[in-house]
Length: 136
Image 1 (tube, rainbow, N blue to C red):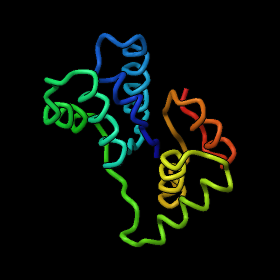
Image 2 (cartoon, rainbow, N blue to C red):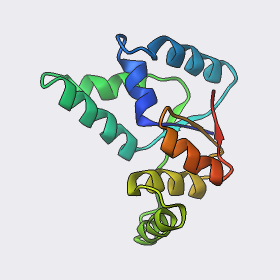
Image 3 (spheres, helix red, strand yellow):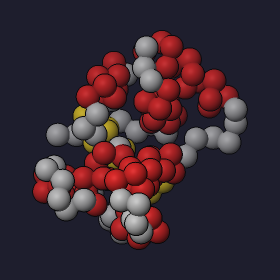
């Protein structure tokens, strides 16, 4: 499984983004290779926040619709237990990572997601410490 970070989804959706073409090509390769793409409601919320801040007239329902059309994309969510929050809080301290990054990484660990597609260098450095492979 390959987790798609918010920045990848933004670049995928924003045809004016510098990384748009590279992201589209990489996603196509992952789909062609039968890769299981995953994201989460938390990550989609980040994408919606970015679009709402950059364009006050953004059609956020359409943003979600376009994300939903990515082939092989499923949502992965944490267990409905407060223990998840304890685990990512602990991971944040252990890695000296931001809480959002720790949440994403803990979600990946819990769901056995071994690969991540992101342009967030801090997140990727933390993922590397956990033996999570970066998609290039």
